[in-house]
Image (cartoon, rainbow, N blue to C red; front, side, top):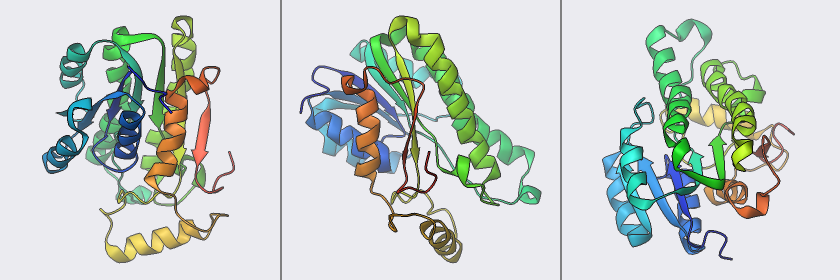
Length: 245
């Protein structure tokens, strides 16, 4: 397929996991990707792998000016799709959280995409698509994911409003809701904590396995493509049946 022939797609948090899987597929289907990441060690090998069909910039998702994004987008022209995929996660029970952690999580997961869309809106082509990566944590009610789930719930609320606000330009806005995907996203946890958490979640997944980055990216790319031309304001869960949206 060539769903992305001659199209420019921006992916924040695209140097690993679901975002990188999506970037590879977009390039294979004739598109050009603009990718951001915050880890220089990840950026260099991805730049070598993806070659001329990708431009990669180091960018902190919490940067309220979106200056790095604007600079690189100006060099490629209008955008046909934006995938706000960057995010961070920290687990903690209510009494373990503090203002600094709250501000950090909200700045990266909520303020970042909100202000980035404000800055990038003039760069979006008529009929473009916007996708936000949320999380099944919004619906799981796990005891230690309150703050993370709150940030991802905010994205879902934002997407519904954006879908209305941008509809007059033919721009669609939808949400990807990944469940347990094998991306290394939970590697920040101590081994025993991570193993226990993953076992707890996996036990509730009807398909009894974790998903792959490619499986999650395939749904995001459907939403970014013209195949989803009459889909907006929607949530698509890729979670093996975990939350049954």
